[in-house]
Length: 212
Image (cartoon, rainbow, N blue to C red; front, side, top):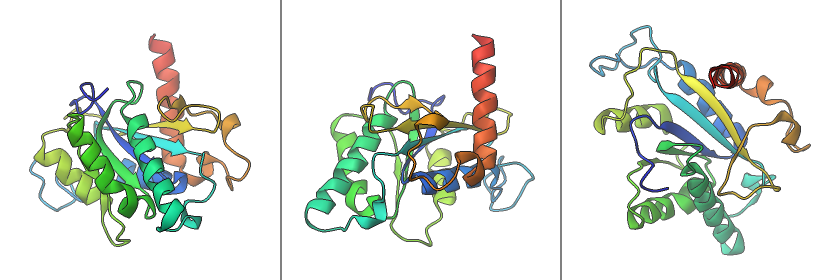
């Protein structure tokens, strides 16, 4: 899996707390902070992540990330959740080229673990994470894609995909998103929380099925 990851054709994968992943996906679908040609910090009328696939890997096995403390057993649990998300992101069905940890709780506990783990298995996937609430994930991710020449340069709007980890499936093998498998504790539908992401996912899923 490590050898298949980090490819130009891969996706920007968001892992962590589902609502934070969805919020980040929504922003990445439309954010315009840079000139796509020369990376100047000016708007050019095009989404910064044009041509990219944004995969939200929604982990529904943890009811409340924020309820876990950063000490004792909870600290270990957070680190295990982070590594589990990283492993799921490397699955061939996901195709990860950049990993973004969308969780203020997971970042300080699992970020360095994932970076160290990727280095040890020879996985050339940059990891974007921060516990700082003022940190701009979109700017950091854009910078990583630019510096490592990982942009697809496809002339197209960003595409969103939704995948999920539930209590019924192994974290190493994520599933295609299914509304019926979302736990009851989730406050509302994904379509309400992230309309652009959800519409793009449905359209992409339909077109992929039609083209097979």
